[in-house]
Image (cartoon, rainbow, N blue to C red; front, side, top):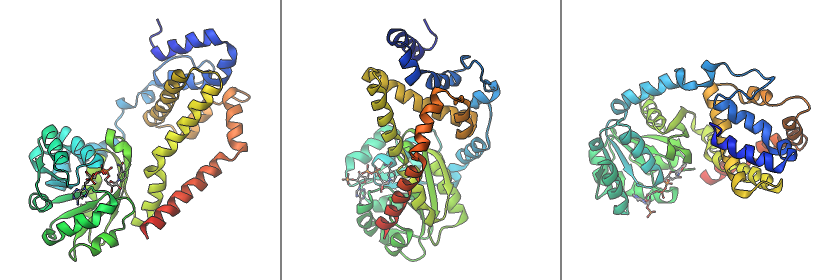
Length: 343
Ligand SMILES: NC(=O)c1ccc[n+]([C@@H]2O[C@H](COP(=O)([O-])OP(=O)(O)OC[C@H]3O[C@@H](n4cnc5c(N)ncnc54)[C@H](OP(=O)(O)O)[C@@H]3O)[C@@H](O)[C@H]2O)c1
């Protein structure tokens, strides 16, 4: 039995269906997967040095920053509250309380649907509040985690109790800080964040932008908070539209690309379930390879692209159809739409 279950399946199918398959699907993708698990199939290619192959053995600058953020999260954000206990709030509460970055008793949630707040209280031991004012009373940092269209109503209920020592964090997509600040008492400290859905599994990417009254310490606190569910970077608010076009909408581009790859695999004769599993594993494997080795995507691509080989044949089609230009145009449109929606 192969030590690699996925490889065994592939071998069985390769044996059954013959060389056309190998040409179409197998070698380049399998090489990537095997490289990722430390295999030795890369005949004629330079294997990655072992130290670089297993990124966990190294401590990168990002990891050092992240560990420091974790150690100081509690000191930075103080007591944390949430208005809205939906997907994003659930991800953040699970990350900060589940990883003991904050005490459960230092975290409070309110939702118009009390059951949602109670569910988080039951799961993590955080405080479920009966009213938004209660969140403000017990929190120093308050994440506004409602849908954008519900934000004005949420702000109306908070406004009378917001003090200057509160730090407010809006994650509502496409709502500018100037609009939110107009609904808050003058001088309110606000930070706006554009997160993305992989935050729900701790693999998010978030752009963090300052409102007019936010301090450098506020920015550090909010950046550290979102580093608990992935990576985060400070950007000017004008850049959040580009962040939306890249990482905000980005997961959907990848999902669409996965659909195309899977469908193309099926069109080439692969059984649907195998095409689905191999598509998924190829994206996971390639992403992890890029993340864990620290090599650039261009370098990794060159390594699996032998002149005149199968991968080169496929990439030539991408180049001749100018797929790069198509993606650039798609992201420009997403950026422009983000600007329109915020206006
Ligand atoms: N999910 C993501 O990956 C993602 C990515 C980027 C940005 N965002 C932003 O994050 C925000 C939250 O998204 P989500 O997916 O977590 O939304 P969600 O699951 O719908 O959660 C929002 C929760 O807030 C509740 N709510 C509505 N009005 C409220 C009020 N006045 N006071 C307290 N709670 C209220 C909602 O109740 P009802 O269900 O009854 O309305 C819902 O339970 C959105 O603004 C979104 O734009 C999310």
